[in-house]
Length: 291
Length: 279
Image 1 (cartoon, chains in turn purple, blue):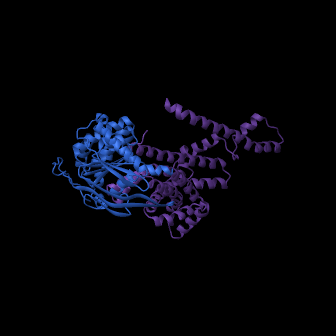
Image 2 (image 1 turned 120 degrees about the vertical axis):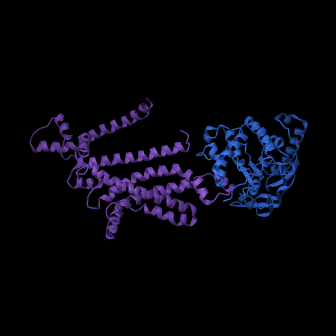
Image 3 (image 1 turned 45 degrees about the horizontal axis):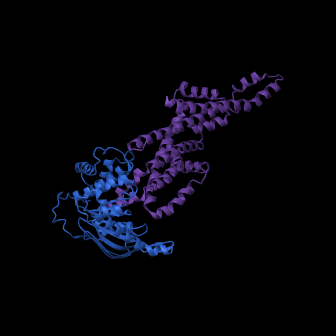
């Protein structure tokens, strides 16, 4: 009962509001085309007919939600996952490079944070570069990474994953620097009275203290890893992946296909972020966080 | 990594015979702050014998905590000498010569009570079986048996502080340094813990150095009260205070108790008086 009251009702209400708004905009945005058609055919069109038509166009400006849902159903369930027209196939291509890039990015972020926390020199020298790296627009740098890596014969999954890594290491590095520095002075003093080594200080105090920071940054990192993977698929000539679907859709004016790919990407991101949240909850329970 | 050897539990009185556990000579400490140098400690001379219970009492800013931290090698003196167990504070710390209890319990929130007591033992490389045995023994010592698997937030403030005392005792140091350990607790809990601490001290025969700003607490617990005064932080007076080993809270109504408390209050007032003139 609590679940229904606390989750289903509020989330459902927002969802219904979004869908309602979406339908309203679909009608408003698609109506000029229908009026235009009617004018050319020298016929008049009833409002009821107009509204029905706006929701069933081949290439609408804004497809109605049920058109997108139908497209997703067709490309996910009706087409074999091995087919290049399957959204599952493209989704997996994007997901695999997202996960690889996210894994590498998280690892890199943690290692950088450890180095920064333990060395004043690195703190002063690395941190400005880490911040600068994120001010470069990813759309500008993504094709370069793909082209440069292609030139040295690194193709396929890794170049795309590198773009995810480039984006995702940042929140993890910044979050973990904060997290590894989060222990209270009293807790640090305590370790000093035990004459603890640097490694013991790290594993018994800094690392466990940083866990809440790690999972928060990982949630951000996994979402932007997905964005990175999609951006990485654009300059590869739209071979495969959600990015390729978006690009192909925009070449051919297939707005329904674009929206289906967008929704699929959003759902994937939601699932990935929830998964991290689930792992965080498990770790929290083990670490005795007050429920 | 050195494994801490178990000391024989029952010490004979001969072992506890007075020898200087702490010896401080002409010690000064000056903090360099943005507002200029601050004389945190000035010309401190102090000797603490084995088995004594010594309280540092004084208003805030008198350097009582700083002096404790110097003994613990958490602060470095600017001049003068200090020895702890016949060694420098740094050597004593590296030999795990003392247990430190902070103002707050400072338990690690992600460790259970048992896990927190285990922490110093893990750092010192005590094998697992012995860790278990020591956790049980020290929890019993502070009357917390049965709370081993609880997390700190599930315990009251007083129980948390008792757990932190058990943690400080877990590796059986000869010297216990306590920095206002009961300062954040209400008076009823504080009275109760004072009694328990006294029993604990009688049972373990450890040397205790205890920082406080409560006169009754200092008089009730101590064999020696060090009255300190601020700006510059210094020792104003050292008052002997031995109310006998079998003490209960009732002793606080006796003339002898009140007389010592009066002397301490007098000492605090004198050390402070000229200060108020220009406040």
